Image (cartoon, rainbow, N blue to C red):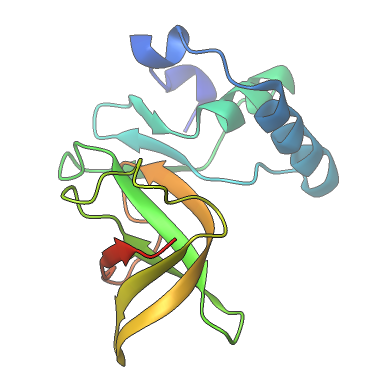
Length: 147
């Protein structure tokens, strides 16, 4: 898709991305020649996610960009919790709306989650708020925060 064809919503236009996030994306672009996340647009060509990457591509004069197009099924942002079991492999869970995100869930928190082996305790490694699931398989839910 031509980067000039991507429509930017007002909430993105008025937001000011943090310098830390911009620098991280710029450095990744310099090293790898691509951005570190996908640019997501809806069926009408409006940017849904990836605004910082979009800005970095603009800064570098990139005209054509690979985008992920989603349907309107994902209208609301969802909080996704990434975490590790004792083995160190990172997995992802969805934070249900009934559990408030301000319930002390931060990187390093211990939380209970549903897994295919039952309810397990994990350590949070990162938290992302997205319009679409970060993986293509079904995402299980967080049960509650322990710390």
